[in-house]
Image 1 (cartoon, rainbow, N blue to C red):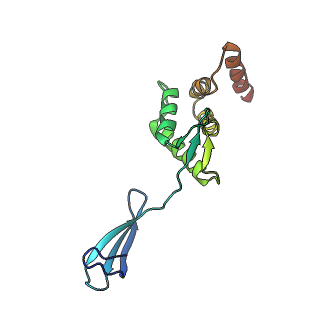
Image 2: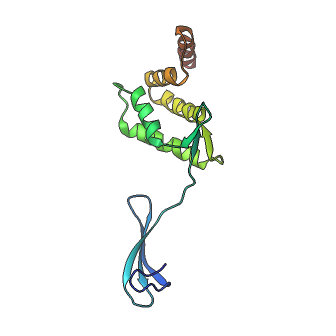
Image 3: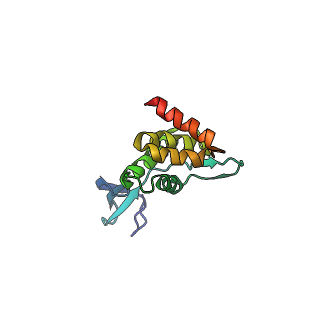
Length: 150
């Protein structure tokens, strides 16, 4: 690590602790001039790319996942903290996968799987938009599956 004061390339770590943003905060001391400075280390993650139905690609945006769940849970007793936890869980699952490209279908299935356990009405709302139910029969089929599981 290069000293910001004298540009010497050697320093020693005096203190190390996790920071609030998920990075590691390190206090360092320059071996040449003796001055102290702080550095932050973050884990570099490879970007996730979402492949849409039309074949176009865009960067994974956790905000879009959360927004979709918020719309499905509108006027439902589902705490925001729970939806944020689910969003983080989905993102972590995708990051841990070996594929850097994931389809919107895979993301949607994960959202539906988790919403099913949290709130059935929110699950049906999300599924109706996500699966683009064409008529009342396909909607009833999904409801029948849900009732059969109980």
